[in-house]
Length: 113
Image (cartoon, rainbow, N blue to C red; front, side, top):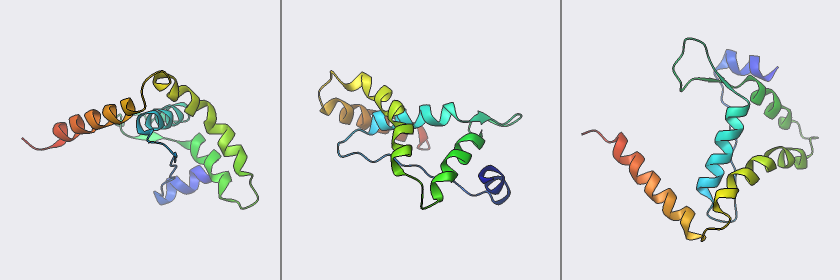
């Protein structure tokens, strides 16, 4: 199984959302919800360490060449729709401004004093 293979090799599974528009905050929210729904914290570990067995098993199926790409699209579509809701009635530049502010705050928080 994919989860056993990942656990024994410390391999990583990558998933990226690509958009024709600048939609970084909504795509990040979609990714966070997706990972949250299919992962759990390992017992006795810090909050950054996730156990993503279900997600690894699911995504591992897409490594085969005969898998329809439409299946993955339909799987992530509800997450993308949900994450876009807060931005639908707002101007397009609002996401860009939000991302710039959030990125600046994170940078300041992580720089040494």
